[in-house]
Image (cartoon, rainbow, N blue to C red; front, side, top):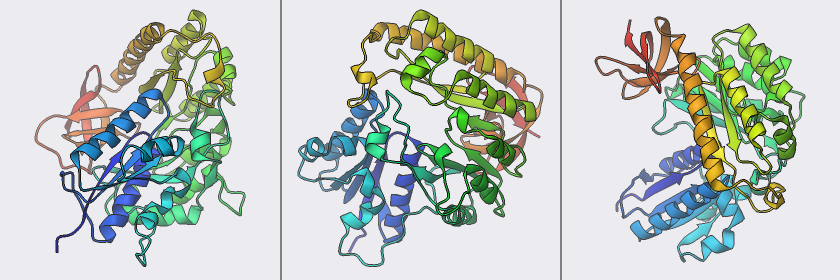
Length: 412
């Protein structure tokens, strides 16, 4: 009898990527084989609903799988599944919707008669040299534009001991870099104690064999003195951080109901930069939020010009039902949003190039990922010229040139 096969499609955030990796590990431990062919037995679609575009991509993936994989059971989970359960179940009789609150029990719900099912955790992260580890889920903030608290629920955290155990297993399987991730990671709270994110970073940083440790997306007001100390003084913590901005106008931040100010943002950036001049930053920006004037937009351009982000993730504003922003007036026309998006991306690319230019002529350690490309400790992308280099190795590279998208160098 041939072994059962499965395929997983993942859309959206790093938290979804982590969860899909856990599904993969569990199914492989149960004797299943991963396959992308047309005759797979099970497909899992881990959806996203953060924007209208995410909804469209998720729905496209579901319909494509239903069409191309006629024999498969189709399990749909994730944030879009939480929001549109009845609609998705009506697409095809094979569709089984598992809401976010039951996501970690997805395999159990698909196989209720199986005994001794594997734990929901990861030991491998397919096709990646860095492993994302979910340490927190949910959000309590209810920003005016964001649907995530409605589909992910209230904030809750794993224990430090549980996270450490999982990271140890990943390192034993050869991973050199770990990224701690969550929906709102700054809310991390080790249940039953007063330990917070800084304590988690220190605990993971002490794990033998770990070579790089990063923190994923965090709000600027959550970069407190304790977290700064843990990152700056860690043995393996990387000098880079994704600090969320969303808008460079304080008026728009207030309208978004963000819980930080522009001063909080610049304080976090400047304090980290003062401790390590090589510290770099990435961020998220929304253009075209309701009521955004040309002056507000110019303020966002000024912030990008001042910080020199390594990368800016740009999102045109998208109405999400149930949110306050969806009921706001003064909606920005799509052509105006697109013009602003393009202008902001142009400034961000120019500033990213300016940042990278400072590293030409320097020696940098690069974790090789795919096709002779990889990232430095401070998250600058580098292409290594010459003979192919095996992935998942850290190599010392002499940076020789800068391009529009990345640095170029040779092995030393």
